[in-house]
Image (tube, rainbow, N blue to C red):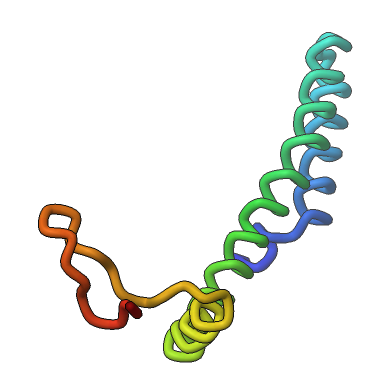
Length: 99
């Protein structure tokens, strides 16, 4: 059942049934329009956001941090920037700074 709650088709069907039942029970037309419009706008948006969040979270877990660090270091060396820093108080070079 948990997978059904993630399905846009399920939610569209549920909204359709709800609006239909309320229509049969004599609910005002403005309420029916509000419910159907809000449901048909919000459900796909929320499902999209949740799904993309899960995809992004899975992608972060697969990032090879060592390869990323090596690529950054390679870029820094290629662009002429050093990987070291300078102590701002004394102006002395720290490891990795050319110069």
